Image (tube, rainbow, N blue to C red; front, side, top):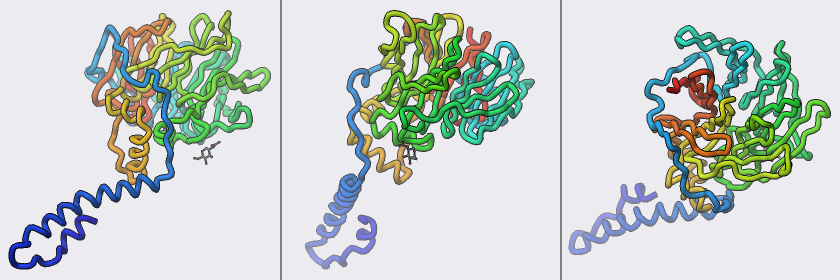
Amino acid sequence: MAESRADSPPPPPPSKTSLKPSLTVTLLSILAPILAVTILYRHEPFDPAPLPTHGLLGSVAAPRENGRMLRGAEMVGAGRMAGPEDVAYDSASGLIYVGCADGWVKRVKANDSVGDSTVEDWVNTGGRPLGLALGLDGEVTVCDAYKGLLSVSKHGTVKLLTDEAEGVKFNLTDAADVAPDGTIYFTDASYKYTLEEVIWDVLEGRPHGRFLSYDPATKETKVLARDLYFANGVALSPDQSFVVFCETVMRRCRRYYINGERKGQTDTFIDRLPGYPDNIRYDGEGHYWIALASGNSMFNELLLKYPFMRKGAAILERFNRRPAMEKNGGVFQVDLKGKPVAHYYDPQLSFISSANKIGDYLYCGSLHYPYILRLKLD
Ligand SMILES: *[C@@H]1O[C@H](CO)[C@@H](O)[C@H](O)[C@H]1NC(C)=O
């Protein structure tokens, strides 16, 4: 608006008023954008809510840090998989399962020399497989963002286990773990928004996530915790006393007790993570590995703290003008009590979505990269 006016200012009268037009142009060029933004803001129906303030600001640090985790990292299966979100390992067969953006669950045989690794198209769900967990009988539990909780038999037959709870359908089935008694613990990140609309769920700041269980014997789906701010990764404790699940927007992991005195209760496992947690995995050696999709930053903290800023970001998003806020993605390692052990990240990394320690290597999945990122731990 300011520019078109500036192109055709009224011809200035010859003498002393020559200052005037340039002043008008200057004023207009300042006021027009402000006016435009005000109008856009007032007419924008999207109405973000305040988030709980506890734990929204600041981050914990780990005693060990590697801020350049890409250095020396290798790419497994490069170009042969699209966005392998989760990385599950079957120790019996030595195969790694990944769920890809094109619907494929692929099987990867990773060799010490990355070039010799093989990638096999195993099963296509027709949706978007996210979290994967190995079942008790060689089957693979697949959280399909669009289809719900699936089970793929070892022969490759896909079966829908559940896609709703309490009459509310899942819109973003996200991650799962399987208990030794067969119970599947899993999350629906949001009943309101789908995978493409994740940013809207974050910007809205209302809790649409649920933590659930599915009992294959009774076929019953139960809601164990509700009103979660983007429910994400799930991992059982080795003694089966609790299940940890991630709440991405709140940068925390929570603990739901499944046995013992506190059965049925939920508390905080770790909060103020230095980034936004996606999947979490237990390594069988006393540690959980939490993938951080993006690092925390002062800008992100302000954005989450102030609903008006999220509304502004939503307007930019509508016009495809939201600046990329994701960087410093990586992995956070904690012990069984949730105490920080190590933090691996890199300014260049974003959307790291899973981390699985297999042998001496850390295998990381991501929503976008066409490979598994492998890091030698020593
Ligand atoms: C799930 O997402 C779709 C697409 O945005 C939306 O139309 C639908 O209402 C959502 N489901 C619920 C229960 O909100």
